[in-house]
Image (cartoon, rainbow, N blue to C red):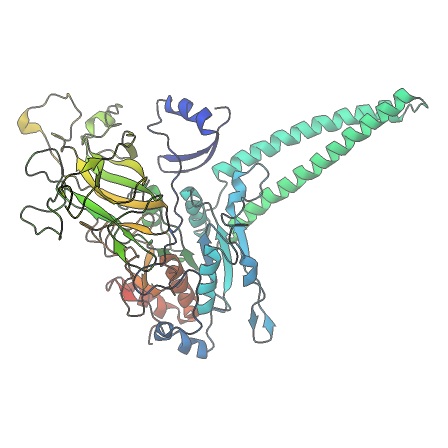
Length: 599
């Protein structure tokens, strides 16, 4: 399609580049396209408030909990990560040059290497600018996380891998490269086609210039017309030389990207700071999470940030005991939270930078509310080549309400105003033979401060069969639905959380929901999970204990905690099988603070 370029793919979700108003309508008309949307970011929300947190960017010189990890003792033994290849994956390495110049006594260490995969998406094969480059002073978030890793393993062999936070297919590319199965990506294939076409154009221009040179230079004349022809030839030759040199540089950059991807093989420890909390299936069924679980990914120990999304998720069984078309967040006869009169309403609160949660959302904040669920389907239509499940069988939707008088002084407390928000149909995120995952999304701009809540309206489907399909009542099959309600901040200086009903389950995103990665949550100085940190089983996977470990983060969230965990592992890496066995043992004791094994 003209004006459209395919960048990458993760399962059924394809990332494209183009002008939205030009290409989106054309894409929507394609038969195989279910929905068109803007990309979702996996960047940490960078809210550092909450219990035991520190101000942004503050790195204490001496923090006693770090001593409890055994890091000081293992450093005293001379083990500081020498020989361990470690990678940090993030989207912003502004100021990474400050990590250069490390010394091991009197010996200068090799500087960290930056590999920027965003270069593959650009025709020039030059990387995108860093998100905070020119906007903030000091180090970017990924650079600060890398600095935390180097505190634990100051002499390790460090590789910084920059990907776009809106492109999870880049994370899968990196994982495949580390696992030794590198190959050209869709974006690199496009760049190769462009290089080939431009080479053909340049070769044609070279032939034209050769003929022009023969006509002009071999028959010199002393007149104005010849001098004009000579100048026109010289200008055209200079332009060709410039374009030819630029093409050579692009070609060299193309092959360098391929060499850099191949060089990732041999990395033994990875700290990934990016996690996608919505927009993708977060129950372990996404293509990215399945890559870690279904393929034998054993090339490296992958420390994955859990995400700073604590108290931002709710999940449970869809129930409507009074049959009024509104879901209840709690079972019948459950005790309701203080100030709540109905189990059908879930209120939002606002967590400030000091960690305190207030009931009013501030003006100017912008939130994204997502309702995700997976429903069972009859596989027969798909086996016959039909697709009746583009729209979900369960007709669920979110309704946002505003409470004008929470204290009930001038108006009844249950006098609520429905907020008019543009409604879009649910998007199908994943499809298998017998089920599909859907997500309903609304964005809430807070135009007036106050207290906001959410209803989930809808009914369970009458069966797992397509609408209108005739079956005897005794032959109909039914399934349960466990919705996941999630809130994410888009703009604001705090964090929106659920105050009435919240669950630890379903707060993890992708690929932290993978069974194979070591999911890391952030621990405070009392060895407890920070309240901003995601913690608990993934959505619809109650028997999978997550996160596997806690790690100290010095106030920087789970991304920094994952990097510190990787650094601690790098420092202890010479312990070999003892360390690997220790980590496997932690899977049986989830939530344990990561420490160097005693033996």
